[in-house]
Amino acid sequence: MRGPLIVFIEKRYLLAFRITMIFISLPFLHDIYTVLATDLADSGRYIAERGEDWGYYAYLFKKFAFAFLFLWLGTFGSRDKFLSKNDS
Image (cartoon, rainbow, N blue to C red; front, top):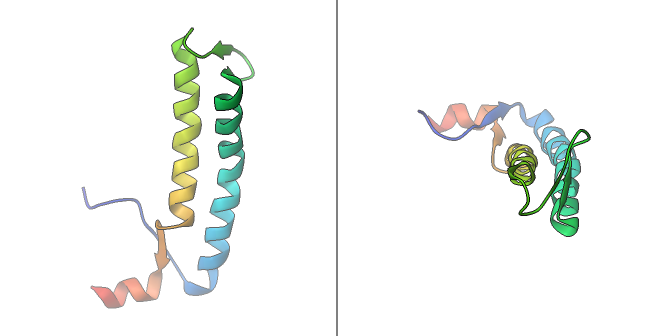
């Protein structure tokens, strides 16, 4: 394993990529907030209540994983392609 997931992008696209990744993470963060506030995980097919079923925690974990991925790519997981070549 080489390390964490990092995307190398040309400098002119880097800011737009970061902003896009952060905007993509917002619906997942909203779902996490809703689940934690209501103690109900509504996946569209099933509704799981906190403490009653493992589906609640699975749904919460899935949303958290996607939110973390896109937040990572929008912050520390994207770098300038040109600067990374010079660092080596």
